Length: 215
Image 1 (cartoon, one colour):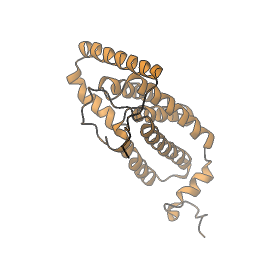
Image 2 (cartoon, rainbow, N blue to C red; image 1 turned 30 degrees about the horizontal axis):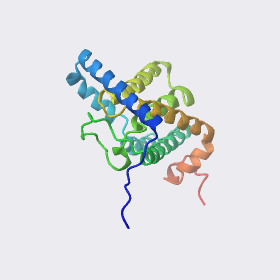
Image 3 (cartoon, rainbow, N blue to C red; image 1 turned 90 degrees about the vertical axis):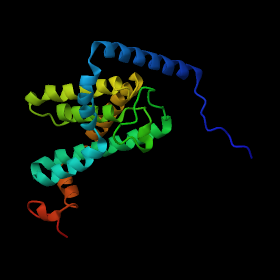
Image 4 (cartoon, rainbow, N blue to C red; image 1 turned 180 degrees about the vertical axis):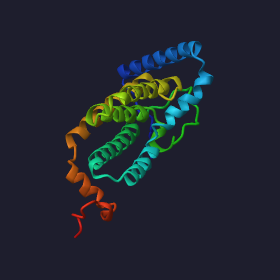
């Protein structure tokens, strides 16, 4: 039996949309490279990239929960962690489905560019940055002094993904939409403090103040 080609046929309308996306993204990148000192900003772009890596946020958040073991923070800690997990799962599934290749200008030096992450749509960095910003601006508002830095960080991460040629414009917009949907999901599933404490008790019941969960 002859092997069938695995190449998928893309509808004509979608092809036009993707070509327009590629053209707009390339034009924008070329224009910005003429206006901005890309080489001097490259280090900043890499730092922004690292600041939103999922496989750093997950263990980092575990360490934060363990180091800052306070009952009144567990509600926030658990709900935020759930959002990180759902974001990573959703991004991996969508990338595996759409399998859009990254821009031609992308260099294979991206940290963690393995598995589904070799694909471009949607941007996992942007979806995660949006979720983190939404969480600490809306779901669990931080002090007003930190709100502008959080918002600026999200915008900077999003813009850097395009200027580094990691993603096309539609990838970034898709990441924003996914991050928004994920934020709404976390808000809908929001666990109370008692539920959060109960869940964390599986990690180390001995550290829970009051010891109410011993069997």
